[in-house]
Length: 81
Image (cartoon, rainbow, N blue to C red):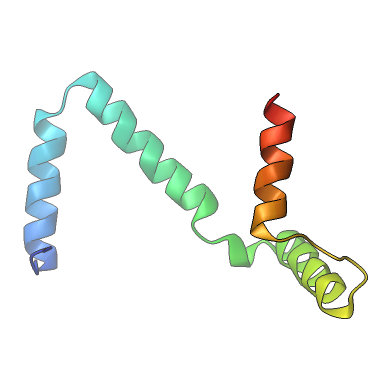
């Protein structure tokens, strides 16, 4: 179970971790933060949201028949052959 922790404690623990991290750990943290910012707020990307809305409308209207999870799995496994 995850413990409840206040923000001040999080800051201290993160600060200590960063100060004691080796180069590999620092690069991993930096990459994780940048990737999180890059993909963390996908709903703000108007172009992406527009495309998702169109795809949803196409599925709902029957224009795009879509596929079941089993069909998708089979399709992807066949592509690996």
